[in-house]
Length: 329
Image (cartoon, rainbow, N blue to C red; front, top):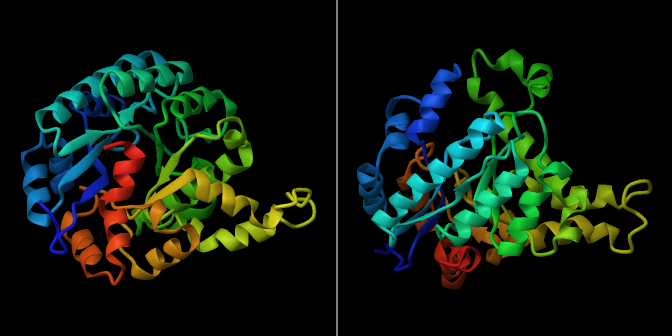
């Protein structure tokens, strides 16, 4: 199976909802996604494969929809994450030519999360892991309590995908709540997700985690959560007196670190100007194709990528080559 341009397609941010996590969400008072989107998240695979075939997608890398087990108490999250990953392994094994997987981690217990990442990579053949927004909705992942996860990821040479989740309640209250009754997604993909996830990525660079773990790799969706567009501005501001100006490479330091340790995916951001900016700032080697199914449908993303006026080599890199290299597919 290939696109009309004759290229294999790997979509790397494609979601599901585990039935036991869904039960825990309902028991905790949360309302899972419903309607057609919910039906797709719950789908055991038939509808997913049908829509992949119709759009021309060869493989999906599956990941749990947010926030997975991240919001639960550690005593519940640790065994549940293990069960989620075991069930995901069964799904991948049912069609390994079409599916690969990112692990769900019990981040409320960072040591257990690191151990589960290792189990998933070494025993289950998973390609990395996904984390979601703030830990428990409160703490940024650059906090050193989570560094055991990143140490293990670097040792295993697998990437961590930083997926958006709702921003801190205080930020929502101050910046966003006035418009939420009319625009509920204002705190989500309209703007809140972007602010929260971009902030997480910038904090990761500032934290020094890459100095300690130089092999650590992250992925951001939505063409980098606006960071490529703001790369020069961030770097220049960090080079000013009182910031990182004591570094001889201060003017380029942030961009150099970001482009060395981050890859970005097209998920839900099928914008040619945004992609052009990302390719100029980061290079085609750092861009991965993704849809963000089922929050976004396959066909718009495929129509967009097939009509892009980019070189055949860059198209191959974005559609499958970079994913094959990063995730060892």
